[in-house]
Structure formats: C-alpha cells, structure tokens
Amino acid sequence: MQVRPLHDRVVVKPKPREEKTKGGIFLPDTASKERPMEGEVIAVGPGRRADDGKIIPMSVEVGQHVLFAKYAGTEFKIDEEEYLILQEKDILGIIQE
Image (tube, rainbow, N blue to C red; front, side, top):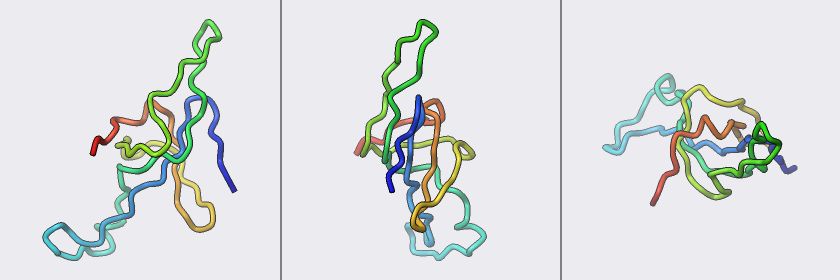
C-alpha cells in the first residue's frame, strides 16, 4: 500500500525510539515511549494552494531527514510500521548530514 498526501501534507517515518543513551545507559520503558521529533520524508503532496489558485510548491523532498513539532501530525500504521502525516508548517527544519 502506498500513501499519496494531499495539498501541503507530508508523510514521515519517525526515527526509531532510543532504548539507550549514547553513553550506553538503558532507558526505562516510560522514558523511551516519548514520541520522536525526527524522521524521514516518505511522500510529499503537491503543495499549498494560494488565494489566487496557484500551487505553492513544497520545500521538502522525499528522502530528506527532518525535525518536526513534538505533538504535530496524525499517527497511523501500515503493516505494523508507524508513520505521521504532517502539514509542511509543522516541519521545523531539514537535517543536513
């Protein structure tokens, strides 16, 4: 199954939750259940429609890694994989590697 977002929506696959810190300390279940704020863009809609009817293209592209607002978007699952649908305005930045 494939999801094609509409308008200024973006489908993001969140980064897996960390189970231990970089120093090797294992996190308890309650700490690791916090929602990640980083993920990979899987699909992008065509863009937002301006008042004059023209489509404003999206600033993000498929494959980019992004930071997004903590409680933004709608969670959903496909084949036990978790995804988010966000509006482009909820993406805070693109991670440059």
